[in-house]
Length: 307
Image (cartoon, rainbow, N blue to C red; front, side, top):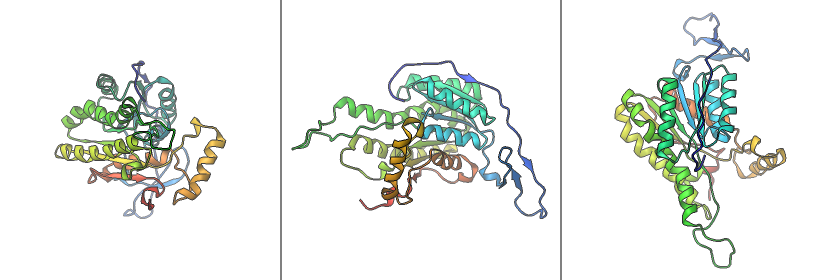
């Protein structure tokens, strides 16, 4: 999601979730096991990890990591709104959420613009009634030096490019929190999850704008967590590593990324899109009730490697 003023009426369908079947336990004191309604597998049921019925908005949920987060929340039982700059991606993601038996809302708006995010907030609250979890997941990068380096041909970054990268990576988190903050604070509960990046832990040559803006998301998260903690609202961040979207590239290009990760990533592969979502689901759950102001790296170990 970048700059733009596109808008679209929200997409909405009713809930048709299949209830989980509780299986009898021979030992009353053990944690009950439940059968997944779609896969037929027995899984452990721990109430503190249950987010069934939560209302979630994923800003930037039309593709990539945002899409994976939206689908992970839907699989966990949440109703999910997704927003992006254009309608194509969020419409498909909303359809996938409904296919999982959850309510979905597809919206468009520029995440860097206050007016757009205020409109998105109004639409979400009108449809869902309230919001439990806000996920801000918009980003982009430009690899350029700050100025052209001696003996090289790559031009330095322009002022416009700098502001674009900072806005789309950092200002979008500010605008999302600014739009939904009054609602969350008034309810005295809720969770915000800002998507940063492993670059927030380490600067690299040629990535000054991107790395600085991602580090800014981490510090913004820490500051906001302290401001909102007295009102029962938790604010955390997730810092993903390499998560290519197979729908946004050829199969050959994706395989090449995965092959490169075999030697560059300690765990030996690229991330799968929903793996960031699983961490986000935990952070939104009661199990994370004592967690705020933290940035969680989900990067296969890249951020712990020596430079």
